[in-house]
Length: 108
Image 1 (tube, rainbow, N blue to C red):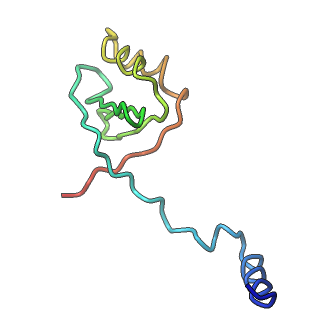
Image 2 (image 1 turned 120 degrees about the horizontal axis):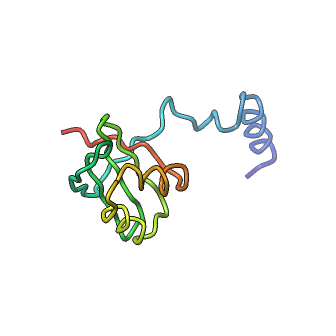
């Protein structure tokens, strides 16, 4: 790469409000879920799914929101399913303890 090309590139990058603005989109890319969720009996949770390969736990709430929790050990998924109160287990052991992303359902 020639020095002039490098100078031009740097000038463009640093003239932006933020270098990330060059690559930013209006909204985050939707998460397409292939994790099968199974219905559960709970006052706040409709369904739960888990991917052993991804170590990802997906929870569908009664209000329609679906979240994927990352780096969740299989034992946490098993304990959630076995808990007498799924909502309480979620509040005490999952909420705020694992990084999460909002899942948007695949459109049919």
